[in-house]
Image (cartoon, rainbow, N blue to C red; front, top):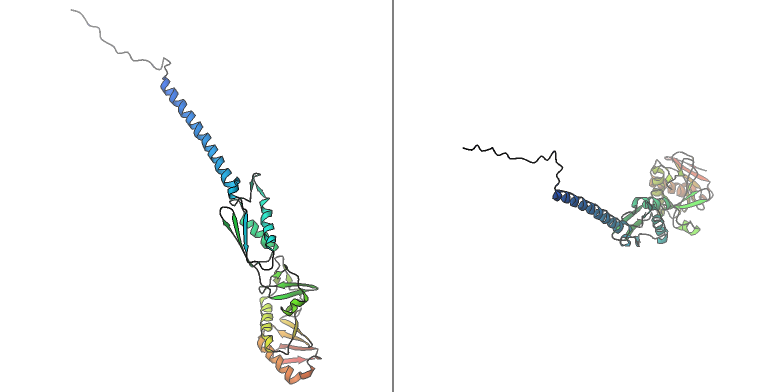
Length: 280
């Protein structure tokens, strides 16, 4: 009788032997190469996209449409826009590109050079700018010393055109002799609204009295006072706190009943104290 030796299954000791699987190694190298190619392609695609969006002539502004101008040459506005194209972004990029064009910056430059009531800039892709401008209409002529400027009804000075003598037949003249009234850095006349409102109210009612020919309105140092110098007539002092139309009615009555033909030789008429009217 024979004793059978037990069979033992010997397992390989991977810890003591340096065994490698070439299949896994090749797979790992393949994944590494694939990632390198993906990164490379991503960088190339990003570069192509940046070039197409920010450097390609496809998006370069080459057309500027301007509407609303009547007194200013379009070339003056375009000059400001073109000057912004020279301001580079990170050395390589330009505001000529419609994506990089800074509307707010150009709007600020236009408004600092011209006193428009409204300016809008719209980008029309791929390469057009649309600029809509509203000019302030002339309302009167403002004078300080020997300087005369056109001004709007909301008290902004308009310096685009010089005032000519013949313009005085179309717009009334408001002369400032008060230190409290001045032109600020935004080209706006700093004046209490009640003064300007009174001047317009008085001027609107003047056509009812053909005999009254206004030479100029004057703001002086007197509080609540507006002086009107009439052509071939006296200076008349009005109270800006009182109704303009009623004061003109009283002035017309005084002229007809008290002064008559001596209106041109009268030095002044003071209307500032209600029904107490002083004549000299």
